[in-house]
Length: 581
Image (cartoon, rainbow, N blue to C red; front, side, top):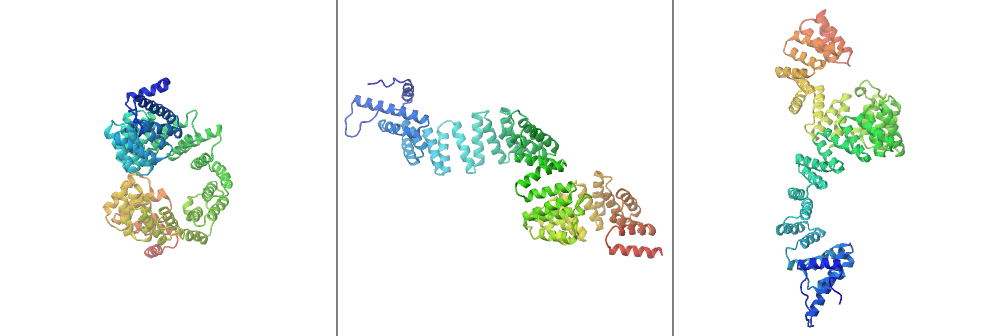
């Protein structure tokens, strides 16, 4: 008979088995007597099959391991270690029913067998019974000192069922047991960030980067966290380390260029991508980002050179068409710009943005002395009507943009409707509140305007434009004039040479009856701003209050020449002419 321990691998395994008390005396088959020699033979058979099965299982051949492990299981009278390995083999070949039966048999003999409890947890998870899986792993934790593998699995399962605090605690134990594992630091950081514990998350991301400054996932997560906290600029050094490494990927370069764009360093982004473009071809995503950077740095022709081939290759795209239209507007080619804007409408006729983009491109109010597309009032009005019929009631951006467009053509009722809707959708939005108040003031509804300005001032009490507008409307109402003066002076403290703010102060003086002070301020506003119809009318009122009717008439006539028919101003002119006569 061959010696049981002739093979060195067998000898080592057998020693491990015997030391652990894994193999018990085999029982004789039913109906047969068994002497010492028979028992020894069965023990040898069990040990040999167990050894062979374990070696096959460990080498990834679970299907071949099952037969010898089954034989060892029978011959060893269901020894616990053999059953544990056999259940593992069945699990590996996805025979979950047989794996569970054997695992349950093992746990009857050894209820605290750690590897089998973990296997039961995996079996429960395979049935999507996550709570039961957690319960088995918690049993492991209760009967044995916490192990890294148990805590790692628990962290994953706790996270899956939404037990965020428990998942974090389990991962923290993993990090304590195995410090220096960057991927765990990042995973824990992600969980902490999701739980709103940003400061702790940041510490773990930095710990991961201390281990490996080139850990892309750590940099990405840290960047997202810092950006959400308004500190994207602090992520730039980490992104730069990734992007400037000798073997840096394009993805790292694009992430840095995009960050440069978002923190207002577009030229740095251009320099980065142009340098990379000089050594390797950029991907389409890289080309598009470079085009955006060119757009932001005012290099319209370079941006057009990137976007036009992409547009042609894609067979036309509405978003790209709008971008190309804007770029050609910048370069002064309004005819080509209009072609692209109309192409965007043709590509997406149900998208309000196409109509509004073309409307703003023809509007002198939005051109700011730049080029604009020539269009008749009827054509422009048709664009607004078509845009309005395509705007959804719950779309903030759409209603805000449409309100601004209607306001620019003094369609105040429609402007008020859409800006009011925008303010309802996103209560407290500064732009919506300010422009809604402006439309209300222009419509003569000063009470509504002052209410919205009071709300806005509560949100941004140090905003100069808000302080000035609030103070001016109070002056128009001849209400709380001391408060009105304080608001306007607060605005002037930030912008002392702002002619519109000076006009507001002059108007406050006028409403308080201090006409000489009003004239001084209004004349100063006129010197700064030149011919402004509103300021000139205010100045005329102040002159008239001091009986300087000739100066008043000159100011009124100048104001009248700068605006459309204003019945109230015509009455002032006629009244002043009569006084002079």
